[in-house]
Image 1 (cartoon, rainbow, N blue to C red):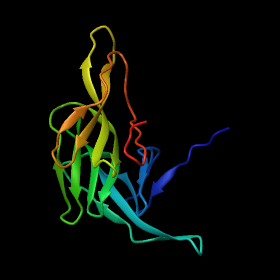
Image 2 (image 1 turned 135 degrees about the horizontal axis):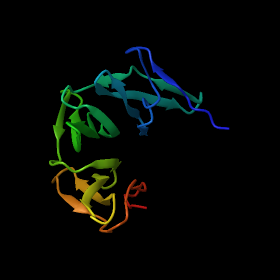
Image 3 (image 1 turned 90 degrees about the horizontal axis):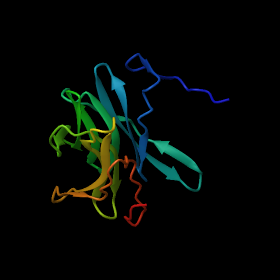
Image 4 (image 1 turned 180 degrees about the horizontal axis):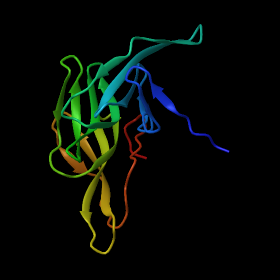
Amino acid sequence: MTSKQFTEDKTFNNESFETFQKGASLTEKYIVFSVKKSATDELRIIPYSYDGKKKKFRFDEELRYFWKSIDRIQDAVMIDNQTVAFIGYQEGFSNIYLANLEKSSAEKITKGQAHYSDLEYSPATGLLYFSREGDRDPKYIFYDRNLFSLDLKTRLIRQLTNTSKIIEVQPRISKDGKTR
């Protein structure tokens, strides 16, 4: 028998089954996730370290960011100490954003009304990987979805898969930067 865990955010008196279902990104120094805060989501980052001798984790103060124009945040990934990429929803459409944590600013780096999901980052390649909705096949009720990469330096988007009638989601990247 499986049990569902009920989460409560006492800071905002917000109780929700979906609060942490978006998942968290874990690097060697940070835990990155989003939670619902009233009408918008809030990005949270917890810096941490691990003492191998004592076999204990040390968690620093939680950092919190939100942008009034972004309704929902998902798939947040840490790029470096001051930059986070995430999928943000605005007026029902999703795009990829880069957040400068030092300035508390967020820049939309994709445009349009496509639906983005499953954002991953590879430090080995410096690329973001994601799934994006394509055209809807009139014979089927779903949209084609393919995998893409985005070069953070050039902002060039490259399509990695091109499969019709197949939904490509959840790219996984190995430490050496190869998709698997």
